[in-house]
Image (cartoon, rainbow, N blue to C red; front, side, top):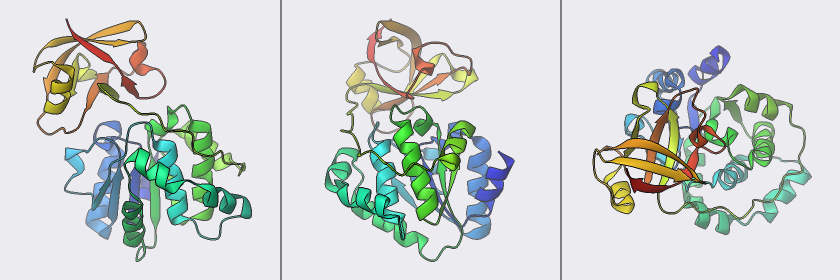
Length: 269
C-alpha cells in the first residue's frame, strides 16, 4: 500500500472510481487531500453515493447508477484512450455509448469535462476501489482496466491487491461487450467496514420515505431468505436512495458476500 500512497502523492490528477473513500480507506483519502493541497491536483470523484467528507476537495462528481461499473469503466477507456491496438479500437467503435450513458446516468459530457481537466496535468492516476473487486463482471472490468493502463496516461491503482495483480498481469484484449446493466430499484444498501457502528443502518430522508421507516426504528434487512436486524439512523448529510450498512470485517452474513450493494426488503422489527 505504501507504493500506492506514494503514487497518489505524486499525482496532480486523480480519478476515484468504485470506492466510498471516506469510509473505505482513510490513508488513501488523506493522501488525495494532501496532493490537492500541495500540487493543486484535480480530483474527480466517481461513485453512486455522494460523499459529504469529500465535497470540498473534488472538482467534479460523476454520480453513476449502482451496478453500472462495467459501463463506466468502458466510458473511461473510450474517453482517455490514445493509439489503442486494432482490437481495442474495434471494441470502442462497437460500444453503444448512448445506451451506457443513459443506463448509468453518467453523461458523455461529464467524461469530456473530466478529460479537459486532465489536459494540463502531467501525472494522472485512476484509483479503483472494492466495488469493482466484488462486481459480478469483475473479470471483464479487469480487462478494461488493463487496457486503460496500457492505452491511456492514467496510472491504474487498485486498492485491492488481488485486483491490482490481475490488472497488471492481464494481456487479454478480447474485451466483452458491456452486458445489459442491472437496475437496482427500491431499497438498496451499501456495505462499509465500521466496527463501531455495525448495528446501524444509515440513510437519507429519501431512503426513509421509500422504506416507510423513521429515525431510530429497529428494522430487518431481508435478502434471499436471510435477514439481519439493524437500527435505522437518518443522516442529513446523505442524499439519494442508497443507505450505508456498516459491518464488521469478520462478518459472515449475506452483507459481506459478493457485490457490495444489495437490493433488500426492509420491514420494521
